Amino acid sequence: MQAINLEKKSGKKVVFTNGCFDIIHPGHVDYLAKARDLGDYLILGLNTDKSVRLLNKAPNRPLNNEFARAIVLAAFACIDTIVLFDEQTPLELIKFLRPNVLVKGDDYQVEKIVGYDSVIANGGTVVTIPFLEGYSTTKLIEKILS
Image (cartoon, rainbow, N blue to C red; front, side, top):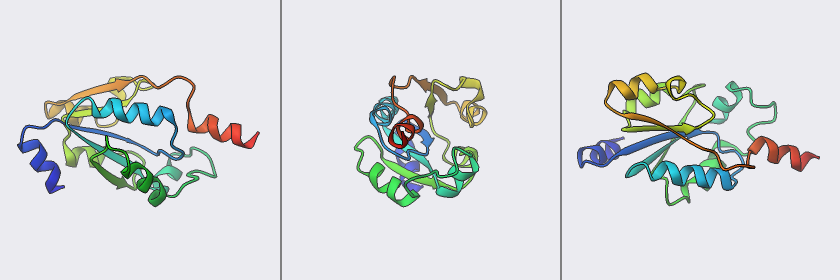
């Protein structure tokens, strides 16, 4: 995390987002690129397998394990750092990192985004990004199984 502190000290705007990113699709690519455009340094909090199971997405999720997901995401030029977290939410990670910008999809109300209070209290902003229409991991899995 020393690198992140150096980025902030040099005046760079640190952006944080999180998710499972089980099967990468164009919606993920669009979302992550837009998140990166909100600052200079993008940190992705990646749900571990344990964390995904805590979310009760589906009994068979994640389809790709945390290491496979991290390897694929590490190839994205827009992501500067990936941090895995085991908890159901990234709240403790957000409190620790203190990003300048917290980002989630626009299916969330800004004030209800986990970490909102912490980021605002530290002078940061919380932003939502619209999803690219027609893309969803759940719908992709349904299509594969049908």
